[in-house]
Length: 120
Image 1 (spheres, helix red, strand yellow):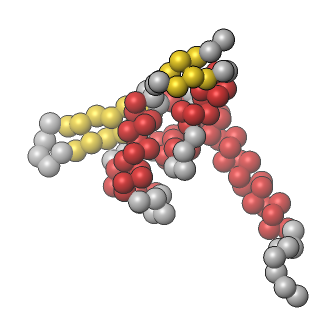
Image 2: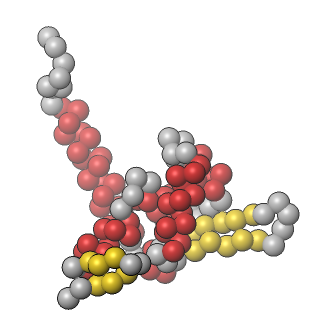
Image 3: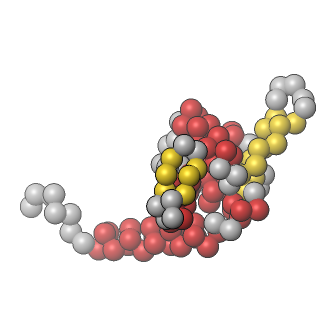
């Protein structure tokens, strides 16, 4: 069965899921919103200081377009915008937690091994 989504074809729902949450900062953004919500862009930037604003905005827009997060714009000047996980986005909690747990365990594993590029 071929799945058509956003002018692309996916052969399995797994491919579709990975395309939605794949991206340099998407898992990190979801992780932030799982632990504190709602968040403004500036708050997300403080939690992810290595991400530049342009990239965060792009990833937030993609997550919003894919219905993973919701964006609320307050009718004030200057504009106030908050992000939070949608109902479907909240279902990613066990997935994101597992990925982050794996990252912690993997980091411990590689720290125990000697660096193969180091010269003795």
